[in-house]
Every structure is written in structure tokens, then in C-alpha cells.
Image (cartoon, helix red, strand yellow):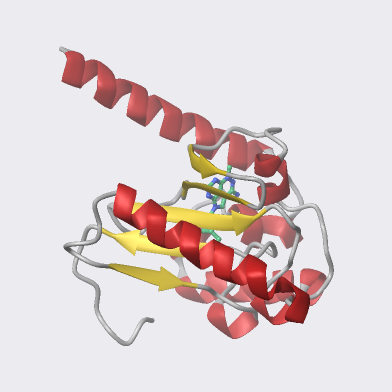
Length: 174
Ligand code: TR5
């Protein structure tokens, strides 16, 4: 019974987060950030939308969905936060464990970082390492990914580190 309740509340919270993401913006040009209509399962469409997002946002600080999560304006399954970083579960997981680590500072992407961000970049990796450990991924292993720009299909222009684990991965990535 307790397990059933836990499962139900897990799926209810996932549904809520997905709905919140879907409702948060309408214009198609922003779809790369929100992927609400199922098109994001299509790799070609995904790349096209990511390319639109790159044209619009690359190198320009802007108010992304992640800024809203930082300000707690939209709900997210936050599992860690400190004065510089925040980690939360990806709403569209591509692995049994899929967590995003982001800086509070609105850096659009890795390529937009400067020398002054060296301590911040180190901190983000440190957080990712600790979060992965807490998620019991150390023995099995995990993958750290940063998608940067159009060709990497970056869709949200707020720097983020993906932590992926809980299944065997293949190489090269798609
Ligand atoms: O493709 P890149 O590397 O830019 O990764 C962006 C990631 O953000 C994707 O894995 C999305 O699934 C994830 N994402 C997008 C939204 C979102 C999210 N993760 C947690 N919560 C989210 N909300 C509330 N809204 C989103 N649009």
C-alpha cells in the first residue's frame, strides 16, 4: 500500500511538472525549450528547434525556464541547492537517473563562460560528482554531458550539466 502511494505520488508529480512545462510558454519559436507537442521525440525536429533556440539565445542572457526554477516560480524536483548551484531531476528523463546541475548565474552556455567562471565551472562538476554519489551511481558509473549550441542540440540556453545513469550507455552518442 505504501509502495502504491509512493508510486502514485511520483507519477502525479511527474505529470504536474510536465503540465507546468507545457503551460509555461506558447510561441512555437520557443518550443525547443519546452517540447510539449511530442515533436521533441523526432530527432530532426528537435535539431531544428534547437537551431532556432541557438539563433535566438546564443550568448544572450535571458529568462529561461531554468531561471524560473531557480526563482521557484515553477515547480521542479530539486534534490540539491547551494549559493551557486542547483540540481533537479530532468522532466523528460532519458535514463533511469537523469539530473541537471545548473549555476544560479544565468550563463547561457559553456562557450559563454569566461576566466572569471573557472571556480563556478569547477563547483558545478563538484556538485555533479556529489549528487551522482548520493544517487548511488558510483559503482555502476554515470555519464556527464554538456550540450553546447546548435550541433549539440542544446535546447535551454542556461548552462546545465546532465548526469545520466542507471543503464548501460553506448558510444558514440547520437
Ligand atoms: O537539450 P539540453 O541539453 O538543452 O537539455 C535541456 C534539458 O532540460 C532536457 O533534457 C529537458 O528534458 C530538460 N527540461 C526542460 C524543461 C524542464 C526540464 N527539466 C526539468 N524541469 C523542466 N521544466 C519544468 N520545464 C522544461 N521545459
